[in-house]
Image 1 (cartoon, helix red, strand yellow):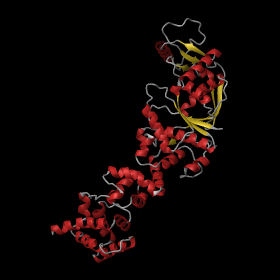
Image 2 (cartoon, one colour):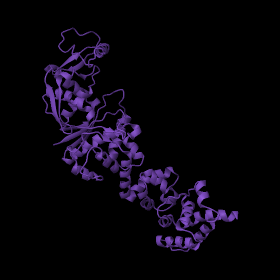
Image 3 (cartoon, one colour):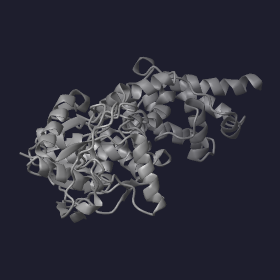
Image 4 (tube, one colour):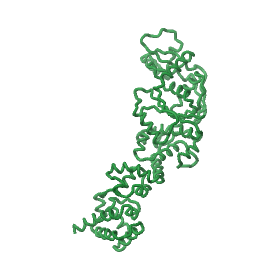
Length: 466
């Protein structure tokens, strides 16, 4: 059975690159009826936090990337790493190294001064010297000194690295915590991982990990290294490009299915398909169509996708997503006006994000005062009596969209006005803005009493001043 994993380090939030890696691993497992494992690689004791772990779990839950096993925490498996390290020591594939930090720094400085690549020189590899007192050793791996490591990357193709390019990496630190390369190997073997799908910043780690696996006599998983994501300017993705927490996208009003769709298309394609469901992604996903070139993050494209998903989303679901944003804007929703689901249905085709939808819905639930410039431009002394007349005639008109639309046209014609010359003042008076959906549909949903009251508030202002 195919088993993939996502193994984030909880030193920060779940970002776009990590989310895409998780998505590809999840989709590949689902495509082949396999299992998707979540592992938390929390051995960076200084930077790992519970808050970051929770942010990762929250982000995955919001995206719907449900795992079959886990989350497994490396810090709860220390005894297992010690056990495997001791096994390698007994086999002669590892050794204790007593070099101090000062020694190693001096070694690196000397190598840099000679123009050499800084690397451990193997001074304790076959040493028979008496260990210095008071120094806790690390455990290093005996990297083969000849030959090469070759593996077929399922994205990049064949990769070969000479063992002479690799030094004796540390497996276990002096404090008994494994290094990344060792912990990953033990975990992937113990968890039966068949396909390691991860970012291509790990390509250089793979030959080291393969050497350790071979020393343990293990079967190798297959590797697929996914190119990184760049900003639209070609630079490494950062916060200024939109590389924020996945949960920030949730809070900013994106739908998870839109972000999933966008991430899937960020470096992978299925023909010319731009929009597809989660189910279609699982049906189509393969590693062969992952691009070998870095993908570029385009926030405008993500916004467009989100708009498309908003248009097609269930109105009741959107209403529940909009409700807290409305409350934050002082609008209580259904209790103070029309059903929120109906308002959402009217407005959702005009917005890119949930907060924009809430902004557009506010005037349905409380009066919104237009700014002075709009008032001066549209609520002129000449138009205010027309608004008053319109409010009177609205008392008796049948309250449906065609009848309201017909009344607006009739009043405009009788006063020698073009439809826009009446429609804009009505919008400003009733909604506090010039941007609304179709005016007859807006007034119908707003309701007769509210529409008349808001028209008269502005019409009466003029009458009092006459």
